[in-house]
Length: 443
Image (cartoon, rainbow, N blue to C red):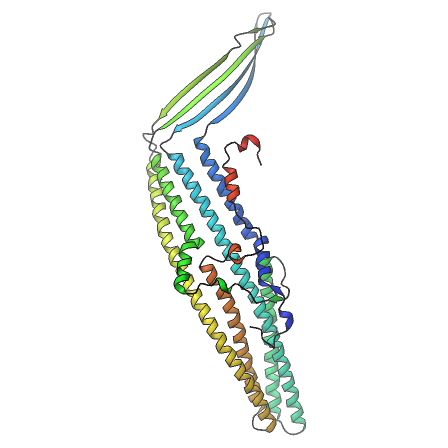
């Protein structure tokens, strides 16, 4: 709602621009995105356990002996290729791969949750600047009104129609108004600093209007359904359960056998300085080996590992229950806050209109001698309170709208349609799982 008594300069920079800037520049979101990439690398690390390792070696050795005046020396050179691969490990590597995938998914949902928190903080900071700007202007107008009333009281005193008490009361109210205005200025400076922290630039002339109300669910039941289906905290909890289950499977698989395949191919030659000739065969030799190992006792570490993994699985399920409850509470609280703010705005609009008429009537009565200067000051103070209530309610409704979007999991750059390049590590995840990438390049 645009209020006529607010300055036009309070409206210019859009909320969409602030959200876009924060999404692009906010360091918390950037750090969260890098965490997703890091988690994706763990998938490649775990998948390497199912693939062979191949290496080449080249060695040289110089030997010499003396027997009396006779000197003998030789140089040998060897070269070879080694191959090692785990053929079977009781599906322990498969469990680790599944755990890495779940943790990477968890990291992705954590980034989405961070995105929601950052965008909601931007909205809150944005509306705080708008609110405090309006309060500064309102209290400045209030100071101007008290100054006019003080001058009127002094003029009336000079012509014998007023009293010194009227002047003193007007002076006291003016002092209160000045203090209130200074407090509003200090609060605005704090809000501007908070805005700069989240958006990355100082606020200009802000425009509180937005077009995102169409994203609000039509009912609280629909809001709860959306939250359960897509809120990143709930999706993170599900991914945590998957990761814990895979960790339990990996711990139990440690009790099983492991089969390894090894191979080696090489050649060598030896040069004698005294004989000035090659010695030894220069053919190619190789070997292939297959080994089976079965754990029998590891000092209790394997049993402790299984118990710990089982506890972690139970803990993840309990944490998921808590996440469901917290999200549900956030939805209900945001929905109630939105309804309450809307009702307060309707009430405050009516109160401001009525109180404005009261102030005008009391001023006329004071001029006719039916009311006192104190009555005028009290009426103006009440009007100021009603106007501040309207500002607070308008701010609360906007913040509650975005809080509800966050509670349902829809406060994202995609849902808001922000003109930005969406941060997603899906392509990166596919790249790091490229089997032969490290043979081509290492970034």
